[in-house]
Length: 484
Image (cartoon, rainbow, N blue to C red; front, side):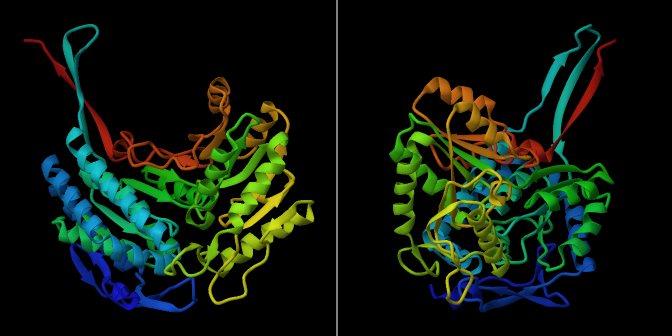
């Protein structure tokens, strides 16, 4: 499919109550690999967004009463349609976000799997029944949908983060209003169109695109009809949203920032560790909350590890994601390039050595090359700041205790990576690490069947796995008298 045809295939209005509506104003969607505008999409105002919540609230009762099997089958059909349209959806994603086509195809498949997983979970919602310990009554426990949900997704995984939230909401019987990131609205709009094709009733999912997130979404969050907020994004924004949600004691799920340590012990398989580092660092051009932010390597291996990683990073082709062989696409915008370069300059000023890369690329678009820094001191700014770019920062350590201490020295706790061939150490360190997830001898842990989420300032709740649907369900207890 041609680039222009792919973009033209996406509806560009607001999706409210099952209808595509034009907004009073529009906003541009940019190709980060060229800086050119791909198209214009609706730029909602607060009244237009409130209409989406009105539609979700109006549909909630009938949707909650829908048979679980029907909800399951809709998700199943949507899964099939996403797989059938994988090439088109991948091209749309690459054009609006920049990631190479091979990665975009992988994300489309990953996104579809959330619909397949929650299609299976929709018919597994259960409760409980038991006699009271003292007798005389029975306890009936039932699970019911929490209600209209506000879903806010990031730009870095524009389709997978949508299905990871929409899937369990549909499965649980919740209607929703979803707001994608202003940089990448097209994947979500395409997803809404697929749900229409799958037979989703009007008003169950509504899509609001806007460049004025706070002004537009705050009234929806404060509205008493909204009973659930699911957000993926930065920790500062998450904290602000939590303050808003507290005003109505709204249920929340927060998947926030990360500062992932990547620990390589002296007994690690170096080939496996380097492969894992390439996955954990370069997935999505380093623009992932799960990206290896601090690569901590035992001093005995640090030099050889750095040599091997530098060789591998130096082989990566940079360019537009639609070009054959490209692995390093653009960052999302100019501000992202400036941030990454500022972190690199700070680390070098504090004593880090640049092995490869380290300077912005002089070409159209927002590119930063694959970069390796060694001897990065713990006090460097990038040790405490999420890099969100293709920069591998290596710091040596001497003891297991030092490695764990460095790993935990952060307010974040999303994911940690551990590479060792010692089973006892693997378990000991995994238990000691302050993180919601641990990748043991592997650089990717995300899976729709596993509970994704962090601790500390990396968030609240879990997405995916058996826990994912629980975030959209309330537990109701009914006490039943057994007296005659």
